[in-house]
Length: 523
Image (cartoon, rainbow, N blue to C red; front, top):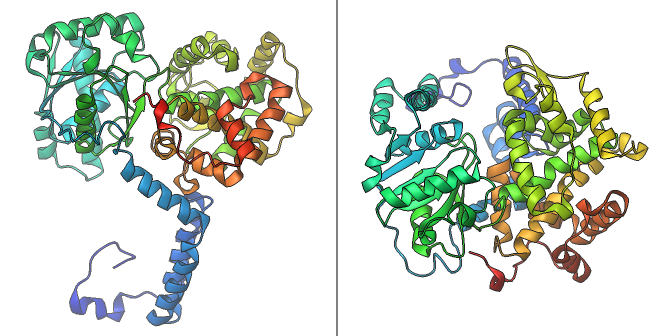
C-alpha cells in the first residue's frame, strides 16, 4: 500500500488490520509534510497531495476524491503549472532543430565509441555509454591513469549495486563492454570519438590531428570541452565537417543534459547522429552554435562574477548562497565553486576574460584563495571549510581574503550592498544571466528561448517550477530587468549594461522568450 511502498492485491487490500490508528496516521502525514517543506521549496503541490490523502483517511474516500478534483482545478491555473508545462514541452522540442532535423536525414548506426581521458568527466561518459549497451574503448596516456579511469567507471557502477539498481552479474556484463588502450591503433574502426582531456588548447589540437590520422573518414570527432571554441580545436585538421561538441555535465552518468555544439562547418548528418546517440544514452540533447562557453556556460558565466562583485562591495558570501538556495538552486555560487574546484573556475574564467573583456568583472578573490592552497572541497578549504566527513561550515578566515581582493580591485564597501535584501541579491545574480541569454539568442547561438530554458534547468539546476531563465524573466518583465541593469551599470560598470536585444525588447514590450530571428542562426 501507499505507506509501505508495496503493492497489495485483491482481498488483502480490504483488511482493516493493516490500518494504523488515526493518531499514527497523522504523525506519518506530519512527518511527510516536514520532509516536503525541506525538499520542495517554493511549491505547493506536494503539500496539497498530502492534504488530499489526509482528507480521504479522516473523512472518507469520496471526500478525498472531491478535494483532489477541487485542488487539481486550482493548481492547473497556477503559475507553477505553467512553468512545469513549459519545461515539459521545451524538453520534447529540444531535439527539433530548424535547418538540421527537418532535412529528412536518418541517423547512421553508431556501435563503437572511443573516449580519450579517464578522469572524472571521461569515466562518467564511459559509464553512461556502457550502461546503454555501447561498446567503448577508453584511451589513456599510461597504465596508471588507465587503471584509475577503469576503477572510476567500476565505482560508478558499484554505486548502482549499492542502491539496488543493478546486480553484481549485470555489473560484470556492463564492464565487459569496456576495453582500455594506450594507443590509437584500435581507433581504426570506431564510429564516434569523444575527447575528454584537460582544457588545454594545444593538447586538444594535437589529439585531433592524431584522431584524423587513425580514425576512419566516417568517424565523428567530438570534444567534451566546456568553453574552448571548436574551430580553434580543429584548425590543424582537414575534418571540420565532422568535428562537433559533445558537452556533458558532471557527473556525466547522472546529469541529464547533453549540449551538442556545431560550428558553421559541422555536417547536419553529424548532428543528427549525435542527437540519436544522446537519446539512446537517455540524455536530453540541446543543439547550440559554437562560441566561447557555448550556451550553458556562457549564459551562466556572469553568475559567479556577479556574486564576486557583491562580495567585494560588502555583501556576505554566505547570505548570497543562502538567498540563491532559497530561490531554488541546488546550491549557491560559492558552494558550487568549491564543489567544482578553483582550477576549473579559473581556467573557464580566463576564457571569458579573453573573449568578453568589456563585460567581465575581474575579481582576484579566487586566485588569492588558491595561492594559499585553498582550492575548494578537494583541499578541505575554499569559500567554506570541510571536515573529514565532508560536513560544510562557513569559514571565519574568509574575510581577510575578501579584504585583500577588495584592495587589489580598488573598490570600497557599499553600505547599500551590505544590507541588501534577499530579493535584490537574486536579481543582481540572475539578471546578468538573463542579459547573457539575450546575447546568445541575438547572435544565433541558440534559436529557441525554450532551448536555453531547458539547458538552464537540466545543466545548471535552475528550478523547473520557475520555467527556466527566460520564462522566469518574462514573469518579471523585460522593462523591469532592463531598468535594473541600466541602474546598476551606472553604479558598478559595464558588467551590468543591458545588451541591445534586451533593451529593444524592453522598449517595445516584447517578451524575451518570443522567437528570435532565425536568419542569424549559427547552427
